[in-house]
Image (cartoon, rainbow, N blue to C red):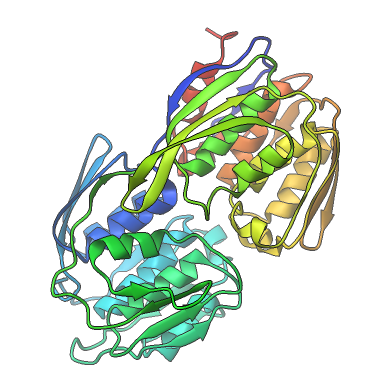
Length: 440
């Protein structure tokens, strides 16, 4: 394993940054392109540990693609034109629950057999939340005690799936997407209702492809057959990953005199909860909208060092809009004056790690007053923390959050298993280094 050591910053951070494409959009664009008809070209594609298993799965399913630089080209054959394997392939999804859940819906729609498996960490992630509603649609899928491996049997092309009216127990874009993918092969409408908002990238991309979607009520989406004969291929440039942007925003907020500009970042309102949170804490953050691509808003973010940040309380629907950014948010909370409380975030216990426990234990190791709650955490900030060696616990976002914490520590912070960062942001260390004016 490779260690990453981040010493305290002694001069401001400065620079303009172009981030790799958004992870959620990269997953969806690559997979959805396979069911369009024709050639899709997706620029600024995120080539990382979490997307490589999806690309390998497409290859194992005989779906041709090429990645040249950051441009992914996928040759779509339409939903009914995918080759049927003689022997069900085992598709290894690595650490990526997104890959596994989206592939389950994709395979369900195509009627293809396969086994979906992954790392020990992925095998701990809950999968009954997708297999149960898929079974209700007539998908021949089985889980393993509610977890991976998942096994899908072949379904004859002449036997459509059943439309579904379903209320998701937890707002989840991954579950919603898996069911909408399966609904492409259903013989009637599928209506999905969530208890609150979740990211809506699938709805925006499906609409651009020509899938007949409607939103009959708040937090409700309906897919109504029939589909057009050909779904339109995708040709666009992905905005920068807003979850990766969060770590650089934290870095600039913490280091005196800093000013960073992040160009062409995704600004989908279902993903901007972190921006709202740091703004509520008093952050000097300027958002400049620049337009939309395939329905996805994007723009520039300029962030400056902000002394006097103050604690806030986060809960309710706000949590879903920043669910991936809580490790980064926790570092801001540790620097802010007063108390920060996060509630209604029990889903954090089911990520790449138990992120509530991971955040709190590592903050405590640095000398920050932090307490785990059943559905969140409490942090009492405002004092400089010490450095030290920390492990990421197999979680890329924990690794990056605490690496950034090193910029404001009394002594260097070392992440001992920093290789995991390549899961979502392979160039993280290089980008952070390029912003520093006190390092060669």
